[in-house]
Length: 193
View 1 (tube, rainbow, N blue to C red):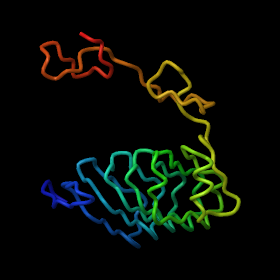
View 2 (view 1 turned 180 degrees about the horizontal axis):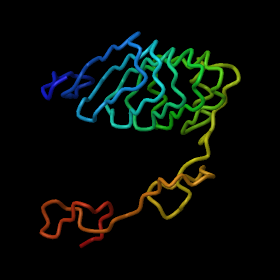
View 3 (view 1 turned 45 degrees about the vertical axis):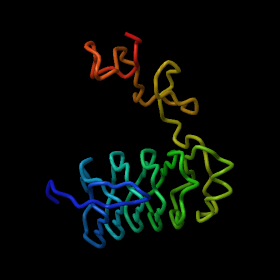
View 4 (view 1 turned 90 degrees about the horizontal axis):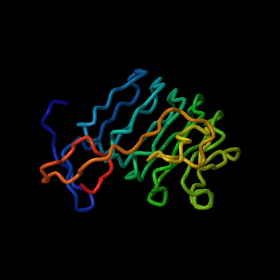
């Protein structure tokens, strides 16, 4: 697509982006989805796709990634997801649904994934009661891999992490008021100045 996108409306909000991307049976192993391509639906099934970065797709509501070679799928930044189909992915061993929004999943299938034994979620009891279309050997955990930020002073501290993965982020103090004369665009924590 070029720099001009169509708008789509969804639940009273309008987004400039792409409504649906359907790339079935295209025989590709990687795809680049720039953040300016606000995508609502992504259908990638039946491709030898081995990795997929969806961290910049905040408007994504539908994902079909069945019959792919994905090893891991991180959906932590995709809190608008309502539909997820991840079926027959023989290589899939990590699935992260810690996006605070599994109650909004209206259609999902996570089965016939022989190497998937654990799904990371925000709430184990809730996941166990509502996420039922999974293989019988799959369990839920607050952090299946154990990777994360183990520094309790960091902004993104993960109390469930056992292995520090180098992802810790820290406050950069400064003025965060954009109309103030001493505004600091790099500040992530307001220092009250």
